[in-house]
Length: 227
Image 1: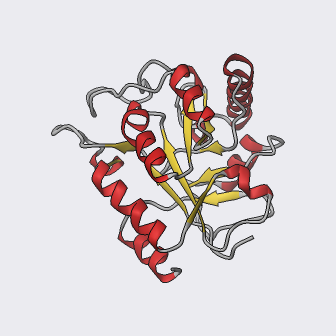
Image 2: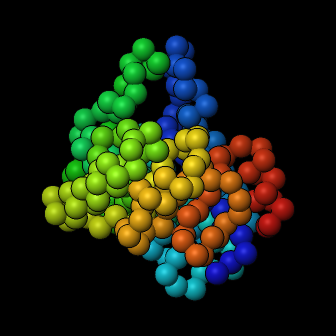
């Protein structure tokens, strides 16, 4: 496995509303395209969690989008197809075709979530793999670990049985206060890579807990340093 496996995570793509309290969660589409083009020129090869089970390329990178927002389907998916780039989309299974009900509307207007039909189309393209955030988008680390574990197992079951999609990884929300003990309890026995806000370096091969990086200046420096 490579000595450096960056996991670059995005949430909402586009421009936030003027009254948004979550402006840092947004990435303009042009900025995203510029970043992806730059990474490709630096020789990075985009992988998904499914590739962790085999030998990785010399310069792998995992591209992650969290939340399952419609902007991924309308804006990011065409970008992936145009550049032939793979990515992983993390969704809360019970919100498909609805909106991000985990967010208070006074903090920012609600965003629509991708539909099951759109999800299947993207999986069929083989450019997008699906990870799970749980059932309804609530932060699993805020739940009692046994209950959160049940939510996670049920989300996997529903993706597989209801939509015929096998999730490739488990995700915790970016910025979640990291506590390794409950996170291990929540994901125990699932045998899936875990995308987290943990501290440390990737990869951690003993349990496939993978630390995320945000598309900011420090991350750009790390990627440049390892070019």
